[in-house]
Image 1 (tube, helix red, strand yellow):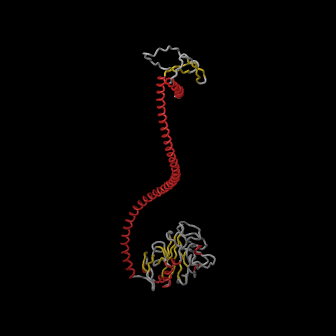
Image 2 (spheres, one colour; image 1 turned 180 degrees about the vertical axis):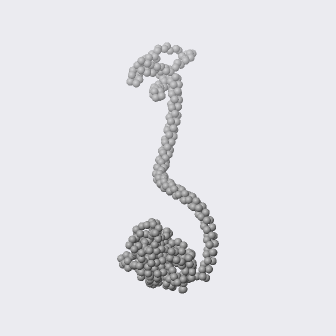
Image 3 (tube, one colour; image 1 turned 90 degrees about the vertical axis):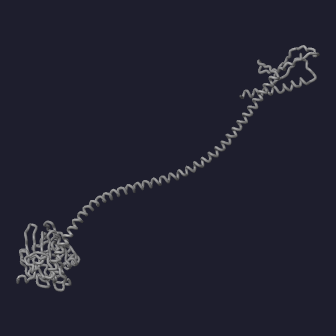
Amino acid sequence: MEKENYFTTFMIILVIPWSLQATTSLTGTKKKDPIKDCTREMKNKSEMCQNTTQIQAPLVNQTVTAKPKLTEFQIDAHKTISISKDDLNDLLDVYMAKLAENAATIQDKENEISQLQSRDKSDDDQLKKYQELSETCKTQNISFTATLAERDEQIKSLESKTSTYGARLKRKQHLLGLYKKQNESDAATISELKARVKALEYRLRERKDDLLADWEAATNSCLPYGKSAGIHLIQLPDFRPFLVPCDGLTAAGAGWTVIQRRFDGSVNFYRNWVEYRNGFGKLNGEFFIGLEKLHRLTTFQAHELYISLRLFNGTRRFALYDDFIIGSEKEGYEMKLLGNFHGNASDAMRTHDKMKFSTYDRDHDEFTHINCAEYHHGAWWYDFCSRSNLNGKYFKKQMDNEQGIFWDRWYSFKSLKSVQMLIRPKNAHNN
């Protein structure tokens, strides 16, 4: 295409001067000599143009046919082409049409270029928008990433809590199952207890009748009940009636009132002053009658004291004191009188005669630097502590321990298996 354009341009440059020359030769009045040779320069080169000699025919009555004018073009030193004016004009028309077509094509290309430039500008705008959107997306992505990390931490925390709550729930469900089983067991126990309560109510009504009868026939000692064992009502002047266990089946005879009993360790005897004053335990089990009741009984009438001892090897011993009186609370429930000793046990109670009663919260012993009740883990009429400690700690087997239940003439702390203290009015010998 490029070579064709150059050739067309070259032809136009050659054709235009030739057309002007041809026009001049046709319209001029002077004619050149056809035989004469002409020489002209063309592109700085000598070109000889020779016309063949033609015989001019007379013009009268003769029609002359014009031959086309030929133009010669020397391509190079060896090639020369000849072309007529009409052909040249046709060729020019062809190349002018080509030029017009190329101009239209160029215009179309320019339009396309303009559209592409407009599109490129639009693309630049779009790219700028896309870049702005990309920056916005990056910012949002950073924000969303941080939010996502925070949510991940929250999810992990919630998963941890869920795991913890799941474990707790399983534990609660397990406990619930245990409670259900326990509830079923308790329901059976409750039914059994209801049956026992009904039986006890029946027995209580019977016992109430017995108590009413005892109330009407209340005495001030167990002597009237003779050689029998049971719980009876005692009535003393200026004091409320109270129940006592009576034992008439001892080796010492009938009519004894039990004031203390130890045999299995089911009751804790390491108690304070108020509890020893009021009494504690069960009348048909381990118990202590209470210092105030003991004071009322022994001051209402003279009593004797009988102590039954049993060793872990089965050996039994007893100690009997024929005159036993306990003072009031103001006097510290002092052992005011003990009387003479009889029995096959040692006279271990003698060192406690004329001593006040001591508990861990009320120290009446003779020691100033220790509390004998704390040292012997009990409560008693301690002096310089003790040779007997019948309210001490109960041991299931024989122990040599100062806190145990002991009674010994050689200051041994060998614990006893069981002990019982009883009192009876002295006038029982007269009956």
